[in-house]
Amino acid sequence: MLTLVGLGLQDFRDITLRGYEAVKKAEEVYLDTYTSRISSSIEDLQRFFGKKIIEAKRSDLEEGGRKIIERARERDVVILIPGDPTIATTHIALVLEARKANVETRIINNASIINAVCSLTGLQNYRFGKSATISWFRSRAFIDTIYANLSIDAHTLLFLDLNPPMTIKEAVSRILELDSGFKDHFAVGVARAGSEDAVVKCDRLKELAYFSFGEPLHSLVILSKKLHVLEYECLVYFASAPEELREWVL
Image 1 (cartoon, helix red, strand yellow):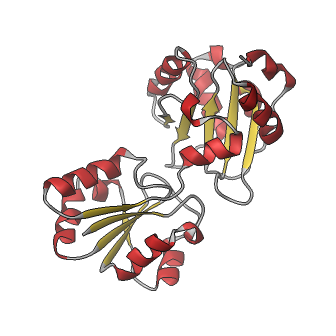
Image 2 (cartoon, rainbow, N blue to C red):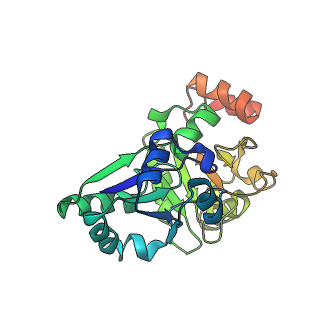
Image 3 (cartoon, rainbow, N blue to C red):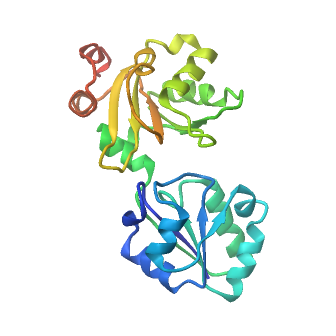
């Protein structure tokens, strides 16, 4: 059986009891280090679970995914995934290939950055459009996603590149380099979602570049120009939003 276990957002303590039991019973355990990260190292996880854990990089999960699937045909294999296992297409594709190969699969869910951002900001889940990633490469695809979401009055959750981890300041620089028209647009920066020292700040995009968010991991939300009054009030109290944001309330 192939089991995908969500680790949650911060460290090994966020794993669910069901996930913990699956790891303890597994004959092989892999840690996804490609799609996201937690603060615990492989060594921390090995001490916690009391067994060897193998690092799984992008090539292991994508091009080499077939090897893991074949190993799961004869033994219990677990892949530990920071956040929730169903957010990244890499993991869904792996489960799909396993089922096509008649290998039994199981998914054990956990908290993800998507629901964490909603809880930290007070933004309503149904108000979000398609998510996108800001990478260190020159692609401007995420800019097109922002515009598409704005056209339907939806917020945009932007994931920031992990190799190396991109900061909100660097993400703002990338956005304004490609489209300076966003400099006065309101956005929300989120740092270390799921941790006890998470930081959330709402302001105009150009101002977020000067705010001290601390260490990554960081995420960024580009707001719709139409806010529900409850979203506005939450941003004021949860993210110290400026008074002029009231102009965007429906």
